[in-house]
Image 1 (cartoon, rainbow, N blue to C red):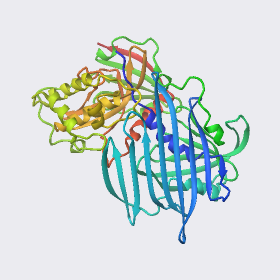
Image 2: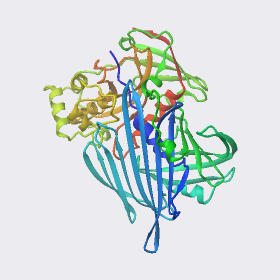
Image 3: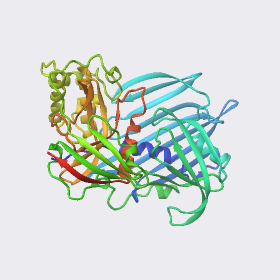
Image 4: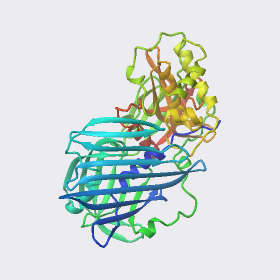
Length: 500
């Protein structure tokens, strides 16, 4: 069968949102109170979209307020289907960078628009977010020293970095609705190629962020602190500061297909890998030890060979039956969340139909896996990560939608659940691709279920990289995808042996 893969687009869009602020080709209004900049966005050497940033200086009585509007437009393909992602961010801040308010929205038709907005009230940040049509309001403790996301761009212009200088600060990222620790370190000046083919001597600055620790970023600044080129260790992502007319030029030629572009091909691809009992892989990642981001758990064990090589043993795991209830265990994985809406009426109805009167958690889990597998008949490649409630309504999507709906349905029946990010083997393609599946807490351990395949568990064709409860208060879900980005960017996988 044709496997459906995890979507990189939403993750990519978040990183693009951060990159866009760092790449600017200045265009000032006549009154010098508005600063507009434009960018073109490239991935794997191909142009995929553009970005725009507008910063305005506004007088409100005796105070000066800076407003920043950022937008990104990305168009790519996935197994031939076109994906269009648009995101817009608005922030307001004081002259010294203190955040006053923000709003963020991401559009990815046909999925519902994801929105969030917030305002600082004293020592609290009031955040309202909408995911899958569901609105949630939270009151978060607020540190006044946290900077607006636009402050870094202004600070680099007002006080340019010198070679060897470093700065650290905290900033709020509306895309994640999280406070992030940022460190920027200036290296030295070097000759850099720009979008038009010209070369300039620019200051290389490294940027690290706590929410994406595995994604290194580099910005290249002129002596005025303007960024003309930005790079990220994410599938060859590069943005360039360009004039408006260049940014808005129509993309010509064949659009980038991110799905086929990120497949990890296998030499001598095996047949029937998912039906075998064990598989031993040799995994190599240039410049990094793969054992650092390959977890050991119920399905796999990892052993380091050298600084760039590890062996991974993956075993088949099937859900147990006739077991005790898991209702009083792993309570952190039972709650109703923005992405796993266990209280949604449609999710609950699907859970009731799938359970079919069984009381055994293991049997319920397998029935639910099969139910989601057969119910999601429309395999939609044009939607980013949708919430369980949205999937329960539309019954369409790929592996991320299968995983989220199954996880929410399990929670309806008080079976702890979480989603897992990793790689899955696609026999038809002879390659591994990014994937998401579900894990259920059964008989005292986490047991994998893959509603995309509907096999009643998984075989050794799944390589786990990370998991997430998709909790509203936990780490941003996108952080679970960082190990996958590291694997897809630079990895070789060889199959050493398998057992039936």
